[in-house]
Image 1 (cartoon, rainbow, N blue to C red):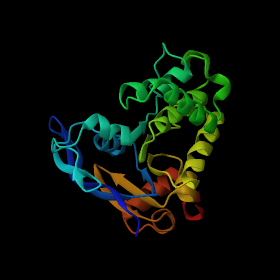
Image 2: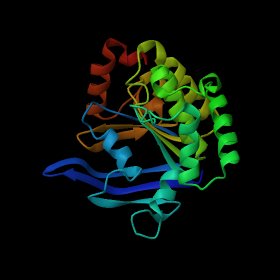
Image 3: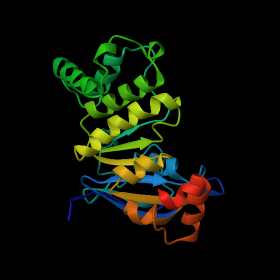
Amino acid sequence: MSETILEIRHLSKTFGSHAVLKDVDFTVRKGDVTSIIGASGSGKSTLLRCVNLLETLTTGDILFHGESVISGKVNQSAYRARVGMVFQSFNLFSNLTVLQNCVIGQRKVNRVPQKEARDRALYYLNKVGMLPYINARPSQISGGQKQRAAIARALAMEPEVLLFDEPTSALDPEMVGEVLDVIKSLAAERMTMLVVTHEMAFARDVSSQVVYMADGVIVEEGPPSQVLSDPQDLRTREFLRRFLGQNAENL
């Protein structure tokens, strides 16, 4: 069995009186690609933000290589560098070039020397097909190019796990494929990833496991062949029927 990297244990998150996540448990192993699916408002993005410590857990714990990341013993900035995040809205620095966006985190967080940080940034920008745009600012490139630059920025930190929060939802349809192709290439290289997505074909073809969430809980999880093609829970079946229409049985 693959090495366990992340363990989410009894995680709950409330905002005021509203419980967004309720007693969520799951495990991420090295090389897993876990797609998290579910309707809007089901808690998927909040779950990723909790895993990355962008939100404070109400209850529960997150273990990284068996050690609690909320115990005070783990440097949270160093942890975030190991568990990177790619946002749906890119979150690039608008006043920096594409290359500078991919260098600054390495310099500020990981204290990588300038030349090494630049070389590493160029390597990952080349990997995602963004070398021609290294001197452009975010306002000068397309949404798909912004997202590929954001992926390169995350990769340049050389994380163990990458979290993707609906990485294609802010893109025009013709740009979705170029971003999914990058994520698929990372999956082929056994990059460990957690991907919140509405792209069911991606979830089916690329994931090692699929997690279906509703109302802040994990309703069903397992390999794509089970969750997407032979769901056991009525709520999963109804979601897929609504989302995919008459094609649910043929996914």
